[in-house]
Length: 115
Length: 115
DNA sequence: CAGCAGTATTCATTTTAAAACATACTGCAA
DNA sequence: TTGCAGTATGTTTTAAAATGAATACTGCTG
Image (cartoon, rainbow over all chains, first blue to last red; front, side, top):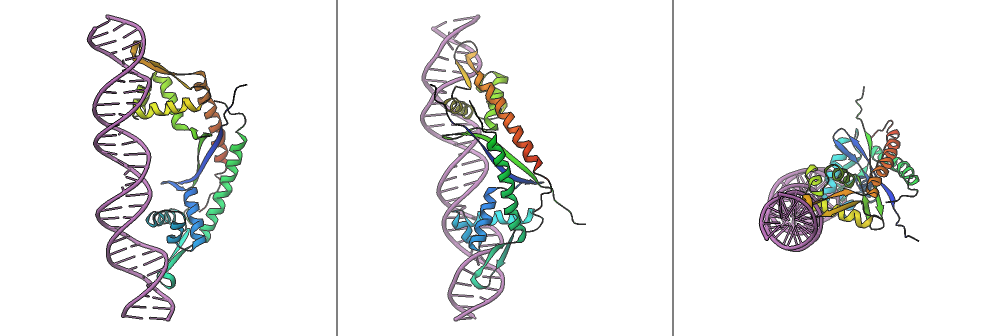
């Protein structure tokens, strides 16, 4: 009896805007970590990514969304921080909904793949 | 009247095997160019990629598919060449079919995206 | 007003991936 | 038996991306 390898379909979903890729799972994780930690600095540490990089991603998201997804607080108690706007919260929800539907659909296509 | 940016969903599809990513659109293009040109060398040129890289991709595909997708001919008239096996042809067909269905489904999800 | 913790920004360094280069090998055909 | 064109494979260069380090700034609080 021949041994059959198992193959499965994987799907990566992201949202494009006129200038190119706008929001994918990486930025969504960043948003979630900002929500969890209250700052870009700590979100970046959580994800073991450079603050600089995280800050740039936030900048890009904010500029290219119709309304900012992250509100940044400068100075003050605790030095400031960052928190999600309503639009930011919604972005997470909407992204995961769409991603879930597409991935579920893709899984259905995974019947009897052979190569 | 508020100006609304246009957002659309993009999807990348690939096939995974136990050891990780196995076959995505990049390798499919390579297969198609091998079919078109009859050799890895010329397929690589067509795609402006290094021969070494193209050769490694073919190697990887062949090892991880149940049966080789590309048959390589060593030496002889014209120095040899490469051509698709039946499994290689089928891989292209199957991949595009799956990708098409998933992308079509994803497009339907693109109604009224707002961020 | 000095300390603090985070944001904002520039510059140098490291890491990584890709490409380029170099050589050996294969087997037909002139 | 030499040329040829492609495969096979290791080494070196280059280019791109991520990281790290350094510095200024912000505005509350003791």
